[in-house]
Figure 1 (cartoon, rainbow, N blue to C red):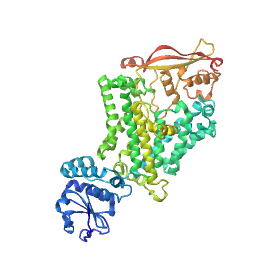
Figure 2: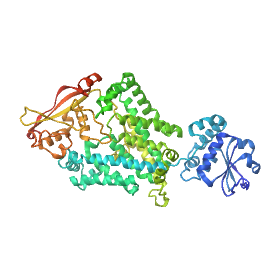
Figure 3: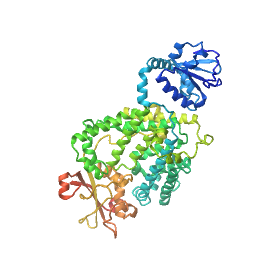
Figure 4: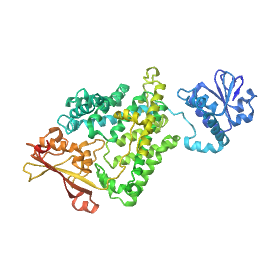
Length: 615
């Protein structure tokens, strides 16, 4: 480091002596790429010049020193070199001072930074073409205003889907005459843990758990979702949407305990801070996408499940997933080499590609295509609600505004940026955001460590459990163990115990000739929960007894969740459930009799029950 007083004015090249001047090797193509990037980053706050044009002004610095490292001449007379010069120069850009802070405050970082700088400087010609390959000819400082505003609109669409979907079934699931009334649930929570229940079960339905309250929350969620989509009151809307959906997830109990529900909550919480469309918030979203995708692959191998390890998981998946589509039937018919290759591709994308989330720009774009493409394929071959749409939307954070402008029509980008960011109205400052980012990263890393080690790190258990009810940092991973058979429950009613009539569901497999339906992004939650119930017993699924009781009572909201009511005049005296093994037919069978499914009887799931037994 040098400490000399120097004059930094040259009218021929327009250098302002009141500005820091960064001098570089103008004959080095690698240097020109990065200096151009820094110039775009710092704007008119730093001056730049090749030493070939200004070296005569600084005789105290030799030509060899100019060729070896960039030199930063400061107005106060100091001269900095190498990594320190770069960090100080780019620190003149708001939000880019963290490298300088590390250099000045973290022991060992200056030595490490200078060593890396020296290595790169000594091999500049070798780094030129990789830089062109990974970043392109011109490096643009990433901007994320368009990315964040576009994502908020997409999030509004996903919220609208989620509220509309649950709105069609919430009364039958958790209403006063539903399967698991929320009022009864909250009474049990309060009786069990007292006032602590308000924290452990955060929901607005503590105020009122009436059917009107349920529908009011759903309606408010729909209105606020539209507000988010249209760009009105977005800061308020994104906060209220998180609160409303958290209320429903808490009140929904087993019917809203799915990974896409908690993913939407975690995304919705992070979206509150999109008023600050900068690198810190974008980094948090990238970390979330990394955890979500990487853990989805990791749990498949950590579980020890043989079907994932021998690449046969997709031999079963299309047939045994909760709600197959008709496309699943056709995928199931494909040869085994294709299925095994698909498993290998899935594991490669989930385990390797997520690391490119933190790579240079072009590798991030490649990661976005791979991760988005995988989720699109899953969406096309399964009914996983808005899960895959939300994952595809998260891939937006692998792009920057330049990419959005390249792919979206100009009229849309103009619409997204018509209201400028008003710094004086931001409700959260950078310091607070840094603390929040550190907290969320700590929680996310703790969840990942817990997935791999089987338990949370000792220092994080209390904090993770404290915030767990709000689902702001979660662990993910679907189908860790692949189901290889498909048990299905058939529910029947009878008035005499001899003649039984079938209750049919709207979407889950039942009639053999019925084509599997494509229902995503809507989620029929009772149909989904029936899939889980079939994997156990009715004693392991207490809600199932409540469901049978509602059928015996003829609950109208519950019956609306089904495709038919075989007892339209009065409820049956008895209800029972049979268990069948379902399987996809093959091409020959389907051509012969048109059936999509074959089945065999396994036995009773629930013995005949009546009200005097179930009460």
